[in-house]
Each structure stands twice: as structure tokens, then as C-alpha cells.
Length: 482
Image (cartoon, rainbow, N blue to C red; front, side):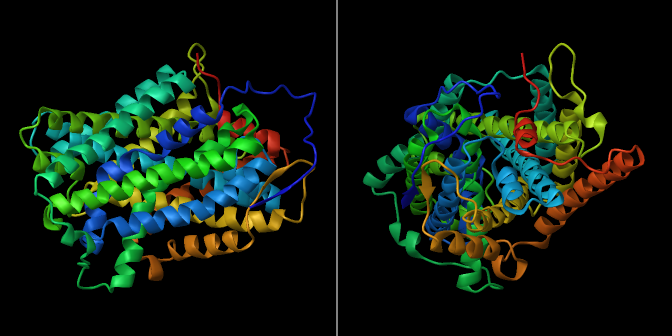
């Protein structure tokens, strides 16, 4: 990796955010953002695609994520501002509709991710409190959970770095418990590692296509690293510390994920993991049925997925609010509660979409909520990552006057091809329902954009507003919470 040298320039007219994050806090932020619903809910579904070699899709997903992370690193150190992928696409292409699509796609991924977390929450809640199983009960719990998330979001959540540290440590503890308890069972002779190298793919898929399908799903567990670029303005010396910290965070989570997937299939037969909404609970209960700590795993899982859902719904509502505030979506979506200063209209709108998605997906009991919506999330973000990888190459023609990370040219090319490969239906092996859900969400966004465009044009505003750099930063932040 090489760097381009000069000295940074800052605009004296614009106030800067307080730079509070050093390497350690940024590392915990990245790890905490990646850990969550994916590994807690989807290990069994990945195993259902490839058999005992469930670790391989996670490893491939890590490689693709790392290549894309290098593109993000070049862009975030080149443009250390909030707004992420939408900002990079806007600087690279300057087409406002493309910028809107990227922004709305990221927002939609937040809704589908939170809805996937709701499905995982329902399954763990039923197990933790001994409520039994059943699609009707799971749906009621998932819907109630999303309504609770909306209530918390409306109330206003004052996020802090200190709170993120606590949440990260709790999430991490659950995965470490799974690994340590599994090691206890392994040393006791309960494991069969021959399963970890056995491929058992569905009859209608080749091994290669099955691995592609499993990787497309496993990628959901690796997303989150891209959110850290929105902390660039609050990070001390981001051009220097971001590359090392982001790659370290990805490496730590990849090691944990691979270890978890290996011990899971070594201890629990693949047949029991496949289709299991709470695979890690099953692993712990099998490894140490009489060990008291096993009863905590469902509740740690609840905590992990609840945190993921809240963060994603906050992000989605704030993006919607910001786009409305900038005039690219209907103005009613920018309404804010006077006392709480939270975007109530955007929160209710995104919650309604999440409730509809959760209810729609639950109609088919053979397609667990977490699996279908988790796959849709990775589909949406992989499409965004493809654009980011291309943006790196386009923006090479626009040098800046300060030192920044520079990734080898081959990596963005490989990243763009790999992400597109995992997006396209004839190569990724994704079920068509994921494309249907993603398509419906994007059509909804385009309709809202078109209505706003026509309204503004008739009102003499010249169509939809142009999202410049400052506007995109405002889109990401949304209104301040008390």
C-alpha cells in the first residue's frame, strides 16, 4: 500500500466535530459494528448450503470484505467526511439520481438488516423464556420487538463511544463463550472434525454454486465495517490510523467467525444446524448441557441482535429524514418531535416498512426471516460495494493535497467483479425472493423521489435538490437527540 503526500487543508468557516476516537476506541467500534445478527443467526443456514465446510464461505466473505475495505480506506482517508458510499459516488459520478439510489439502497439495507434481527430476536426470545416454537408466536414477538425499537428510537438515543464499548464487549463475550465451551467439549472427545471438511451441497446445486450461495449469505455477517467511515470526522488523525485499525478489526472478527463455524459443525451434526434459527444456542446446549452458562447464550444473542436492530433503524430513519430535508423525498418525512428532536415521521415510515417485510416473509415458514432478509441486506450492500470499488478508480483522476491511503489498483477491480458476482442471480445462487424484496424497496424509493421531483418542479424549485458534500453529511447525521 502506498501513500500520496502533501498537507491537509481545512475550511475555517465550517465547525468541526470533536475528535474523540483514537485507535483503541475505533477498533472496538468496528468490531462491535461487524459482530451481531449474522453469526448468531445464520451459521446453520450457511451449513445447510455447503455442509460441514461452513467456515469456507465465511473466509471467502472476509476476503471480499477486506478487498472492499481497502477501497473504503482509500476514500475515507482521501475524503475524511461523513456520508460514506453516497459521498464517494457523488464525487465520482456527480449524478444526483445515482447518489440518491446509493443513499436509499443503504437506508433499505438498514431496514432489512433490522427486520432480520427481529426474526433472530424472536427465535432466541422463545428459547430463552421457554415459550416453545411456532411461526405465529415468532411473528408476534418479531413485530412487538420492532414496535419497541421504534419507541426507543422516538424517545431518542444519545449514542456515545463509551456505550458502544460496553455493547461490543457483551456481544463479543457471547461468541467467546461459544468457542470456550466448545473447546471444553472438544477436549472431552465430543467433537468430530471430519465434518468440518465435508461438503454436502443441495441436490440442485454444484459445489461451486453452493459455495457462492453460502458466501452471499455469510457476507451478511461481515457487513458493518463500512459504517465506520462515518466516524472519520470524529477520529484523531484518520488518514494514519484508519487503515491499520479497520483491517485489524476485520481480521479479528474473521478469526472469531471461522472458529465459531468450525466448532459448530464439529460438535453438532449439520442436519441439526441446517434450518436452525438459533444455531449457537444449539452448539452450547450440545457441548455442555449441564453447564449453567449455556442458559445465558440466548439472552446474550438477544442483546446482540437488539443492538444491531436499533443501530440500523436509527441509521435508516436518519437517512430518510436527511433526504427529505434536502428536498429529494417528500417534506413530511422530515418532521421532528419538538421536545425529543427525533424524526418521528421517518421513524414511523421505516418502522412500517420493517413491519410489512417481517409479516410478508413470515408467510413462508420454510424461509426463516433472518435468512431471507439477511440475504437481502447483503444483496443491497454488495451492490453498493460494487459502486464504491469503481468510484476508487474514477476518483484517482481527482488528486487531493494531503497524504492518504492508496490501495493497489488491482484490488478495486477484483472487488468490483467479486461483489457483482455475488449480486447477480445466475452466479450467486440467491433465491428470487431476495431480488423481489430489494426491487420493491428501490421502486418505493424511486416513486417517492419522482413525486418530490414533480412537486418541486411545479413549485418552481427546478426539480429534486442536488446533494452536495455538506448536504450528504447532514443526511447521515439527521436531527440531534437529547
